[in-house]
Image (cartoon, rainbow over all chains, first blue to last red; front, side, top):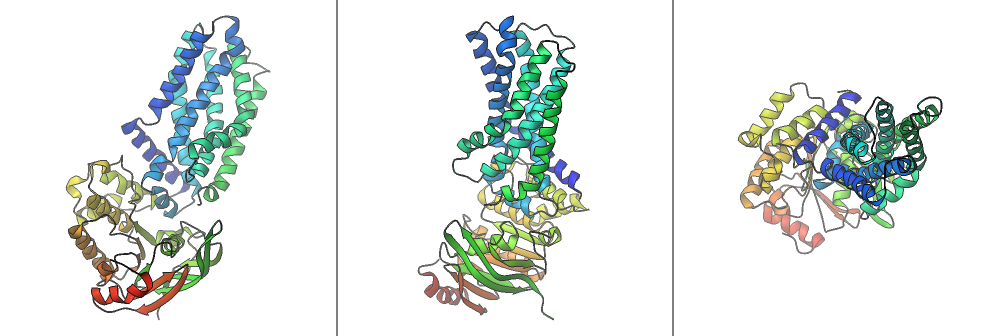
Length: 225
Length: 236
């Protein structure tokens, strides 16, 4: 069995377990929608405010939702110590990271797609083709959050204060990517998806690739006790 | 020629300032059933985790069938681990759990193997049930099926009798006897040494991270308990 087959086997297992329990997706989506709703009532989010705080509100809700999901991503492995069985299986152990990371990416993208219609509704956006580049920003931003978050979730999964440690480890590390996500989303909402958007997308793609490559190398050491 | 399946050479393991294992040397020959006894905190489970390749020694080395399980994935494929934790997923069915591990081990005839393993542990009729609804005994039987699904040359057992009632213990002992008769190398950690008398060919006792007693074993359950008693204090 090659690396990709192992990765897909782990991804399939995670998706199947989530399909049955909805333990991650439901709280993540609920939390994100709640944040959007609260901000909608706190500010007049149409018009000028949309461009001022809209992207920040949106990405804040995604980041905190991702923390909820990431903190659960190794819970199944912890419950019956099944991470030991994964580590004992033959083949490259970084396939465990990639399978988990792809699972987290899918859950986060699903939450973003659920939230997008509500965001357009709350922020008085008229749906249109301009939302397509926004999906690109969502994808790259989610890849950054999942790449970094999965590694830190693995590192903190065996620790007593894991719920506290995960955000403390992850938030400072994702800050550069998060700033680019907010900037890029603001540009898309301003219908500026030319020259000014490209550097942010490039930055997100480089961040995701670098973090995935680093995590593939470090994962084996990160999960050791 | 006798072949050593499990070799620990001056293997040490620390957890911060706590030294769990101190330069342990141990060779377990192919086909041997070794009982690893010791009081709580003696380093038994740590030794087993090193042998399983789940944990890495701070110094010294561990070899399974001549290879380092940390570096050589084929060496890992030769190991099966049965612990008091099932290492299974509660939200998957019995069949899905075994199929997942069959995939990870790249077993060619996965469907037949899974079916055979479920049949062997008497869980074929519960194949589609999720683990969450299983009793402790059923879980442990499925865990044994998982640990032996890829027919490992080396089977490591960490307190496999924990939480099982007497009939379930007897059934598990019976299954382990079959494993032994197939010539698989086994190393078992247990506090319930009496249960292991019929299985063990060798007794190794650990105390404070060091081997303090090592002998070939052939005797009754009571003799085994009596032999271990001075090293362990009050035992089952």
